[in-house]
Structure formats: structure tokens, C-alpha cells
Length: 142
Image 1 (cartoon, rainbow, N blue to C red):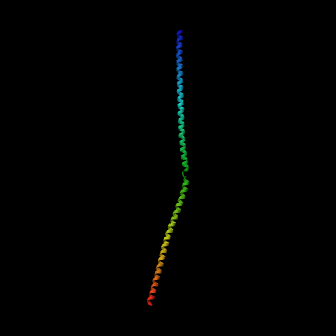
Image 2: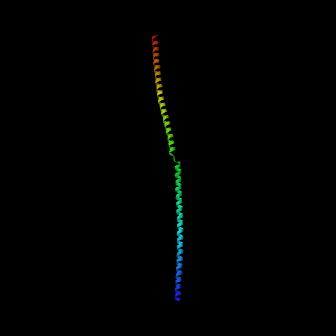
């Protein structure tokens, strides 16, 4: 019986030692799992923060593009402005042609006036020559 009691005691010691080892292993495992969960939580938080910053910059970029697009000239506005500029160019071309025509007319008028003046000078010269000849004839005949 003593031997059985001794075996029982040994088995009980082994059992207690194994139970302590298992408890210790479970506690270590729990600590490792908790550390891993904490690290994973931190990694997720960092990834979420990075994604949030990325989305903020993307949203800022979209806002800039939207502002830029809002400031662009629409096709209708461009057509209206182009038509107005075309009308102004046509008016300026017409005015230039009118001025050019007036200049040509003024030149022709000046040429005609010069011709008329030349004709009058010639007529006055002929009359003066006739008068001078008549005066010379009268003086010589006396």
C-alpha cells in the first residue's frame, strides 16, 4: 500500500507539474495572442489613417478639378465670343475699305483739282500772251 501511495503521490506531482506547465503555457499563449491583437489593431489604425489621408488628398484633387472645370469657358460662351469678335473684325474690315476708298477718291479729287488749276494757269498764260502781243502791236504801231 505504501507503494501505491508513493505512486499516487508521484502521479499527483506529475499531474500538478503538467497542470502548472499547461497553465503557464496558456498564460504565455494568451499574452502572445494579446500582443498580436494589439499589434494588429495598431496596424489597422495606421492603415485606416493612411487611407483617410489618401482619400482626403484625392478629394482635394477632385475639388481642384471641379473648380477648374467650373472656370473653363463653355462652348456656348466661346461661340458667342467668337461671333462677337468676327462681327468686330468684319466692321473693322468694312471701315478700312471705306477709308481706303475715301483716300482713293480724295487722291482722284486732288488730281482733278491739279489738272483744273493747270488748265486755268495755261488759259491765263495764253490770255497774258495775247494781251502782251496786243500791247506790243499797239506800241509798235504808234
